[in-house]
Image (cartoon, rainbow, N blue to C red):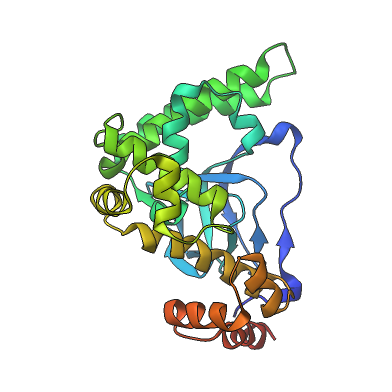
Length: 286
């Protein structure tokens, strides 16, 4: 059963924009949905059931990672449970991390829907656990000077290792095309409400629209326009599911010229109208 609009919850603020814990057979008895204020990493040792991220459902299995970006909406199906680490961090905490790790964070979280669930070998899981565990111990210590900087350094290592686990992300992290692609993903996250066209981003990046489309396809397997539209659709769906903002206002917030233009765009990509999409989730939540 889906959660109704009125049941959607906002994640509570956490101290210093950072938290990590290890849970054993953490079981969810309700399907409450949360819009995340912080980026989230789940390192799963074991578990079963399913997690819903935005409107995609993923089965929970041993030895895997879930990456969920701030602004995304998550819920667990009743009865779902897992054992493993749960790490939350905000952008202001990430800024404490050395800038050399920024590439990994941009690719992993600015395009989180492409990296939502990452399967791990047992060896990769154990290697990551060797970094998560001391970070948890550091987090649990009494306050001391530079404690936040020490934890940020661990987070940097975790981000690099997660990026390296995913072979498709690890390929050529420093080559020219990947640098442009990472900048493109970052710009989408910053400007999708104002700019919908590939040419707008190509101009900001100093390349042609054709070049941007080609390198996007090579780096991600998805076209540049598809990535822009994906960000718009994801935000539109979240607004329709978990707010009572009128469709007209959502259209203008996302910089569509008219509500009709937005409705046409949404129906083309989601196969239902915005109002039908919202009504579906309200009715299922009753």
